[in-house]
Length: 337
Image (cartoon, rainbow, N blue to C red; front, side):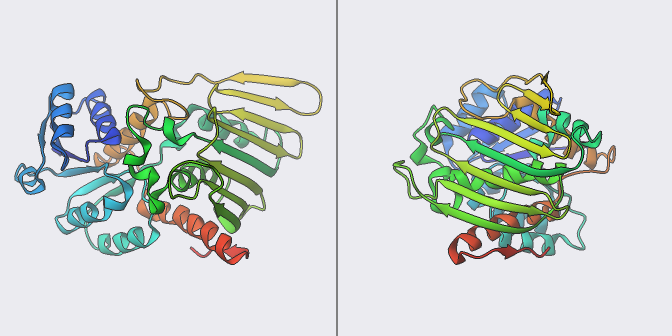
C-alpha cells in the first residue's frame, strides 16, 4: 500500500509529525491548517505542499490522516476519516464521549485508528518494564508519581494564553493526566477505583484547573499517589516505586534510576535522546514520537500486531473522568470498562 499522508493541524505537534515522517522516510506528505501562516511555515521548512482549505486538501486523495489539531477539534476529522474509510493516527484525545462514539462508528469498517501513546516508548519506561518483569524489588505495593510542568514553558515561542492548554476543557494539567496514566497502566495494570482532587491554586492567568491529584487503586492491588501541576518552576517528573524487597527512584529528566534493597544504592543511567529545538521543561525526546508513528505504519503494513487503539485510550479517559467526578462528589469512584 502506498501512503499519501495528510497532516491535519500544522502547529507544534503537526510540524513535529512532519519531521517524524520525513525522518522515517515518508515523502508523500501533505499539510492542512486553517492558518495560512502555519501553512507557509511548513512549506518553507519542510518542503511539503499545504492547504488552508480542507476540501482542496481532500482533492489530493490522501489515504492516511495524522490528526494533530488541538483536542477539542479532533472529532470533526475523526468523523470524516471514518465516513471516508481513511485510517488515522490521532494525538491525545481528552473527551471520552467522543472516543466512545468514534469506536462505535469504526465497528464494521476497515479503518485502522491509532491514538498517541508517546510515554510507552520512553527509554526510562522501557528500562523500568525490564526491572519490574525481573521482579527486581519483588511485588510492588505503592507508587508515588509527581509531575510539575510550568505552563508558560510548554511553547516558549508563543503566549501560553493562545493555545489549547489554557482552555478550561483542555487545560494543561488535565492533558497530562492520560499522558502519565498511559505508561503507569502499561507497567502495572488497569485502574479499578480513584479518589480525586481537581482545582486551581496558582496565580496563572488562565481559567483552568492547574492541579490534578489522585489516589489510584490498580486491579493488581497496587496503590498510586498521583500529583500533576502546571505551575512548578523548575519543571520535574519523579517517581518512587516501593516493593517488598526495596525501592526504585526515577528521575525522568536525567534518566537516573536508583535502586535500594536495604543496603546501598545502585544507580542506572538511561540515555535520554535529544528534545526538539526550542522546547523547555518536560517535553519528551523527539525519538519517542518517531517510534510511535513508526509503530502505527508497521501495523498498517502488517509488520506487527500492536498499536494503541481508541479502546485502549478510552480506558484512560474513563480514569480521567473518574478523577474529576470524584473531586466534585468527594467520593471514591469505582471504574467500569
